[in-house]
Length: 189
Image 1 (cartoon, rainbow, N blue to C red):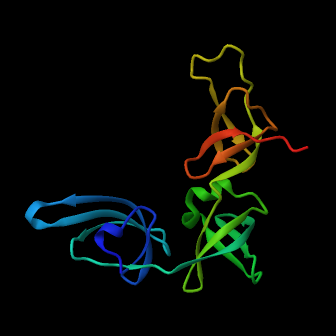
Image 2 (image 1 turned 180 degrees about the vertical axis):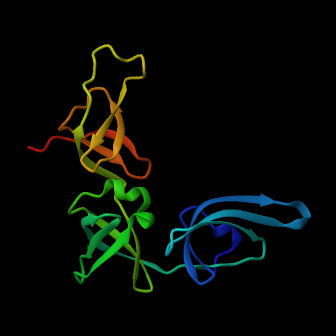
Image 3 (image 1 turned 60 degrees about the vertical axis):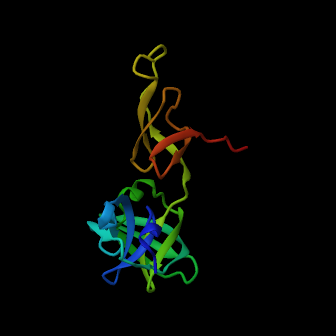
């Protein structure tokens, strides 16, 4: 059982017999009324987001979410197919469940699969991933009045703001949590 003070961003909890992840929280002390915790919870089964206020006396169970390795195979429409690397079972997650994670999926990408009661919930990606730039407008010498950035398109179709020197065909490292450019990838020899 988790106390009010143990409910933090990213914590997976069991609420109304379903797994949720805490997206945001705000702890408030109300003087004689005690403490409350205002939270924004994302249902890991449906993807629905709810606001809920926990009272000082409330306790919740931590959701028993297990992790295993999976590989992204392909997508068709809004459905993304994965294969469990242990038993080779295939499963499908929809774009609504994956959210912005779908922008980082390239065929063959290894991901961490989140399971609850033997059911795939979602996937986790590495924090830093490397992608090829599919399309980049030319950087014009001396064009730094706008901050020296430009928007490029990655191999997945995702748009990313990068420095002016990035060109089509370059490999770039992207932070998948923030969706930001990190660096140019080291060249393989």
